[in-house]
Length: 123
Image (cartoon, rainbow, N blue to C red; front, side, top):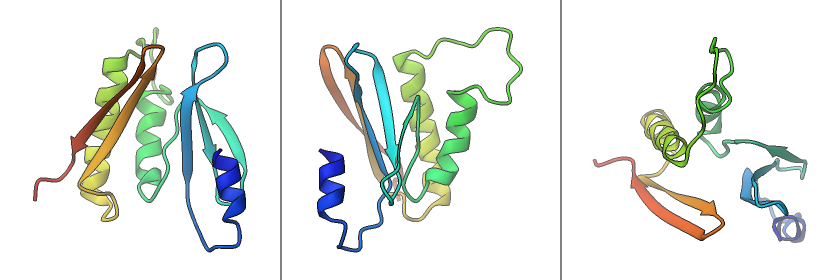
């Protein structure tokens, strides 16, 4: 659906950074990112948008455990992933004027979708 939408709007000057998340055929979480040209990449986690360059290094460290000397990597639970997402967006909102006053997080599992609104700025 996303690729059809992007292809149909190819002559209109959109510049977007898409991140598509869901469940694959085996019921496992999957994330796809698309660049403005249409290149698609499957990843375990991804940040996009104007604050993407601020968010991605934090995700690389806290979710991908890059540049961390750990004997054992902690399990990525729903609670930990949610906390990392909230902390990362709060940090980005302080440094990127295009990051809004809130963000929505949708937690997708076999039982459905749990949606939350997280306020970022209170001024």
